[in-house]
Length: 251
Image (cartoon, rainbow, N blue to C red; front, side, top):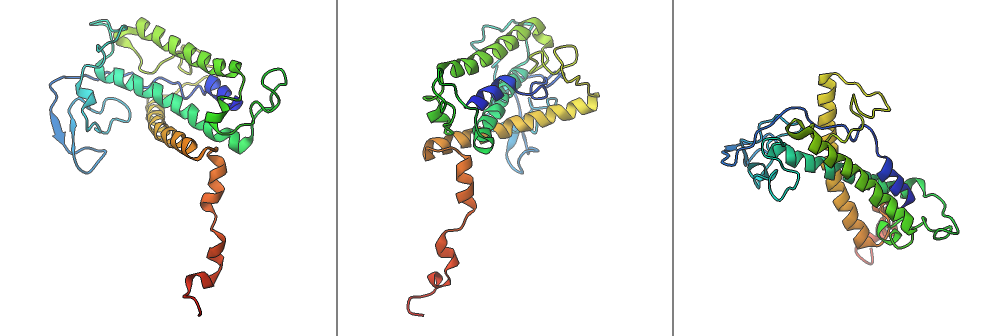
């Protein structure tokens, strides 16, 4: 759990690179076009014009046709705000980045172990619980506050930049890992390389959200950590090695 907290707070500079500099338009009266690049069947709204990285026309419910940017949004300023499609991508990146850190937090302790605890802060075994749900009741409250504080800081930073950048918002930018901002790894990509990094990030975000949902369900259902379940999943029961088990009795 301690490692999960550290992973959540630290993250990676590449993971928080902004997602798009191009602009995409959103029309409420969208037309649906038959055929998508995501599926061999179905249709997609013409609001998905391919201007955002990872846009393959997959929107069966039609989220991209709605005015989400202004809906119950205290940050919205008419004429000086992101488009509806960019606002949805902002949310997708925010959730996907948290999901990536969550997946690391689920898997890392089981593979590499946890940090030792402190006797005065929950005991020496405070971080030894590998099931993340049970760990919430064993770790010191300070560890939980670390996670909440780290998330709150990143969210505050993101909201601040949304207000400052207005309609020129660089979607996903939180001022880390982007040239001109806090860039400890000196990341400096060509436009082609940067476009590829944007595509890689959104793919990882989407995969991580699915993975995090599966890990949460599995941990809640099994009552144990995910890693300890991998070995039994790939092992054969003892009766498989007994040929007689598959033959009729008496032969």
